[in-house]
Length: 132
Image (tube, rainbow, N blue to C red; front, side, top):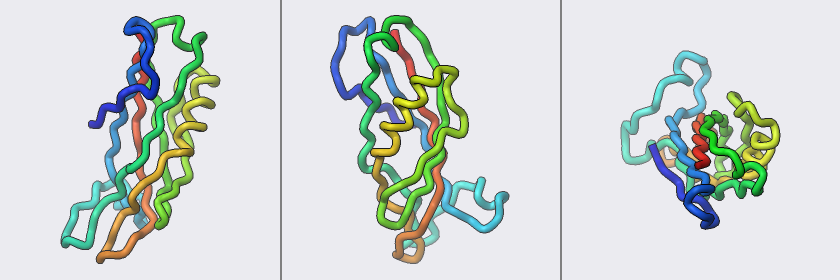
């Protein structure tokens, strides 16, 4: 699990905490093997990993109440490190989902590698919001 600090500092009582978990999954022809975490068999094989994770900037009205919620995003990671993203398990708040998606579209990755060459892959990342 990886913790990510907020992009802006705010009073401690209103500071959202964002945590992401990313079980890496390489793209695979069958659904069964797509759910398995790939293991590195040689120095040329590696799962994709994020290299830029901008955080959402929550407006004041979304910071006013304390809440905890989780969303799950699915990234289709391309060989150039760009990614397409969708929320496969959104939060109950549509506005928060929109802000989250806009931010996740800015994430960049180092692509998965197979035999020393970049490959397309998929990764599900859980995003935890904890606003106090």
